[in-house]
Image (cartoon, rainbow, N blue to C red; front, side, top):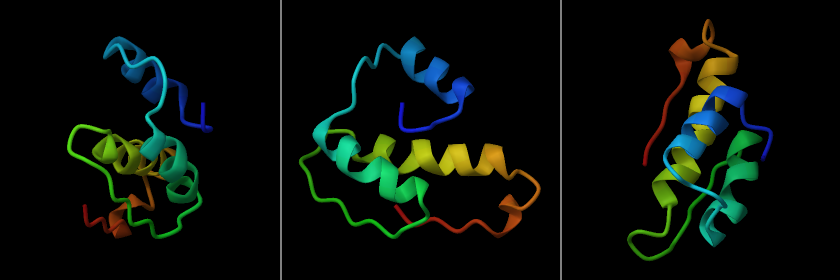
Length: 73
């Protein structure tokens, strides 16, 4: 799903998340592409997951280069 690493997908499944929320559907791919994203949605709609999952994917995929990763949530 979304091209996320298998370890992340496994962790998401273990949390009981079965499908992305609308904000996640709209934000995850642009974040995966390294684009800046501003998401507006009510509390509890999954904004943090929308930002953190692709970030974790990129860090895991490029852990040697992750020293220069900067994130503001």
